[in-house]
Image (tube, rainbow, N blue to C red):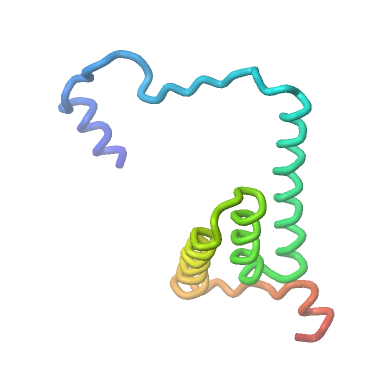
Length: 115
């Protein structure tokens, strides 16, 4: 990729317009209460993910968490939530457990219950 980028920089077509490639403007128009609520919401989701990984393990947490996040937080339709969850699970399972053959530890609940 670096060689391709270097080649395009040297021999690629000249830029047609000046300015940044992506124009992203961040506004300060968000009230502090809304910003604080958003930050607390995202940290709560992250803490819930970490706790779920500890309690039930990675392989079970990933699909459940993706589905719940899409359905509850993002308010995505049932169809999209199920399809995106399936894609995430197949990617996770295929990459880590089939291709790389990583065996994840069982969660604390499985250990406590002797499963």
